[in-house]
Image (cartoon, rainbow, N blue to C red; front, side):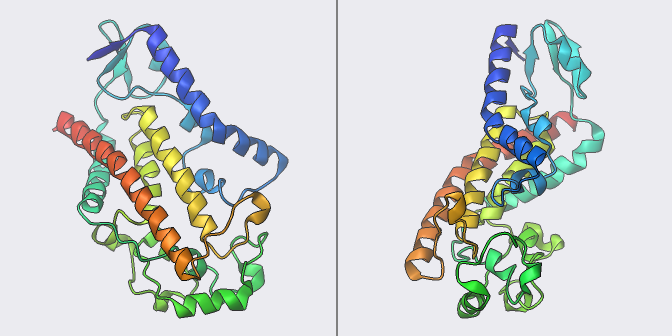
Length: 286
């Protein structure tokens, strides 16, 4: 057990809260004004982890917080010699951690594939009536016909079920793969933007049994990936200050693949840390 003095853990807690409030506060302010942000709102609306929970700090297991009695109000913490610490992983969460470990290890075992070029967002509006486009407040850079032409001229290669399930019905049979929830462990690969964004989901599912700094690391990576995701989409986000990655051109596809490779490299150590935490948590309850 590592002991943190009250000054030490309070400093870490303040640093974590200040870090994530760069995103939680603007999101909450937008909500109070009834405004939407098609890029950043996704991190709070698609992922079921409330801003208040993202701001809440935990040291993770194996740490004693001197003078940390306030943590006893939270599930999972208990008194120990010298302060407060996390107890063992509850039995009801063991299955979740095992499932996360299987998915994370399977993904980490594969080489990144960088040939999808972000076409999943295009497939989500393919042959879609104008009033039914997902981000109807944003214009399509190439218009509906131009967007459809891009989808028809390039091969769809999406292997991520949570992107594929939003494809329009005409786009689904055009995809080289037919992902399903049951095939997720089989198909997930570390070059996929959404698989790397989903490290944030894995991290907060482990909360508070991982350090909150790791949750924030995964969230921050997800923010940057989401920005690339939407810059490479068919939408015109110039009004929000985002320049497009024109994947309808060869140079744009090369730009996307380079960025995708960079995110895969950054995600690798985060995935490894999550795997190690899952293994440690499971070993403690066996």
